Length: 358
Image 1 (cartoon, rainbow, N blue to C red):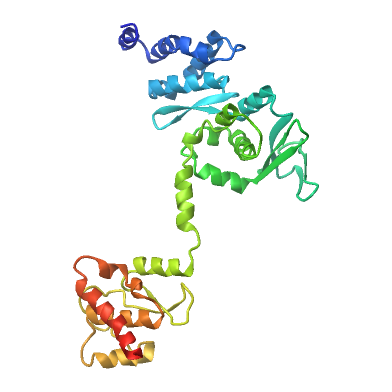
Image 2 (cartoon, rainbow, N blue to C red):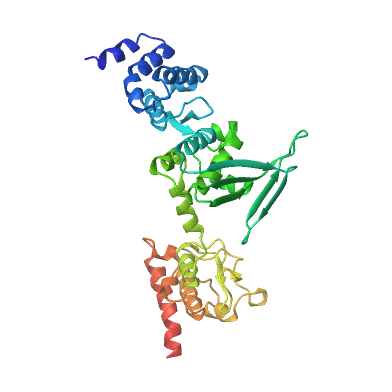
């Protein structure tokens, strides 16, 4: 009953007062999650300050707001815009640790001697050398506007004397931003430098000796990135083998697309089928002329008439065989329902070349 009563009362409260009531009810859980150096009263005040300064948080899903606040408490960080921030994706609130909060957690853990991340701008002096004596030298430009961001890097030193470095160009950072579900809003538009430094730190963290809870803090906002979708896109766009490209061509090239030359590489074009071919005859005036790139033997096959769709399918089957392609190269549209006659004609044309060779 106690859990239900505040929800009933909240219906008569203003949005801000209702949010405050819900946060107060969560103080017991916050206290259990928070480290000893952060009083629960202070944490609750910071949460309400964040909510009061961003009306969108009041309109967002309340349960997600409380859950995001609890995650901040579990990380031992404040949602104050420095340690981290409460951001909105869709109608739900997400807890996002910021670079300052992450660096604070890493330093306080004692697992590393030092760790830092910076942005180098156009007017800065920046030198990066790989090899046996890897080094980074960065001299910031302090007299006015330093120019556009150019490089983002992070450096970490371990207690055993090891030094780890990670360097990313702005273009590489933007590729990561491109898979963010909030790439055009929130932190990426308000705090690009913070997000860029966090991005390079995330990449460096993969090579650092650190505990699971620290790694969880660094990757707390993974839900805001479509990494799986980006991976799938990369696989779809990856270069295929020759066989793979031919299979893709066979299944995607529509009737009327360019044909492949006998000795051409994948993508080389020697002629095109008429664009107005459907399941009927070619329109008047569109016949192949041997004097303009047509094939005399094709014209001779249809004296006084135009080739039908099955005639064309048969010819394309012969051309596929002559190009060294197997029966899997049959165009995808011939496999569709209602195109059985053209499919059979294509197979007959392909088979006729085999018979001739025999």
